[in-house]
Length: 164
Image (cartoon, rainbow, N blue to C red; front, side, top):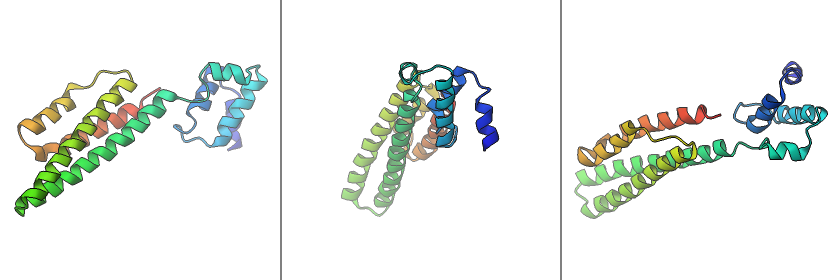
């Protein structure tokens, strides 16, 4: 551990700011952030200069991570409700099926909105592949939802991990 902290002294100022900003993302302990702050202070960076450079937090990553968690929660809710709708459909419970179908569409719309917000937050255009998948769900078959959701979740997760 001490060796890793000593290696911080060899980093340039920008990399130290990156350590401060993204230490949780890199799975570094809090002591790394504190040591990087001490090194920057020794080099003449004051608290105000670090704040102005945006060194304390990576807002884009934090916001994208929050939206990704909402996307997963809403997508899994839609998947579970979809399965419940299928069960009630085959057991001929018309009212139950109708309620679950409406709830499924509600959570599907929430998932699509989370997806749109995620790409807006990371300032990228949405991939047509997964958006087309959601359209196909409505046109061809709603049971394909879980496949499209899993593919889309993996795409968003990889983009989140590759954020600066």
